[in-house]
Image (cartoon, rainbow, N blue to C red; front, side, top):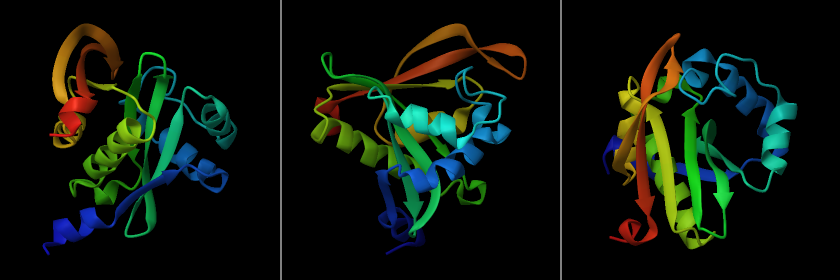
Length: 175
């Protein structure tokens, strides 16, 4: 087994428990992470009370990502609409030293499997800022396809940038 295969085999996701709210809040407060998120998360300090509110909202579901049993990031479903069977996917690698190992792509794959097989969702989508190519690669590596572009729909470093949308449907994930 190669090093990358061993790393990916040791990636797990689990429901975000209260004892990790503070750690996820610290990660989300890091400008290297929150600079790429929507405006309600960007450029601000996040506390564990806000994470608790987000977790209690039934339209969200957050998961802790572990690599080799160590907490290293999060993946999430937001805007869950059980009637239409759709949700938005978002994620962050809190431990930057682990970047480039495929951990986040594997965690997103596990999240999509959960969303389709356990939640019964039919469609997932995500977006990245056009200047965040690594996040787009995470999604493509997890099976998502390019779905479109909204011009000047986000702000990055004080300038408008395009949002690049990706999607994955349950039928495609089984192939």
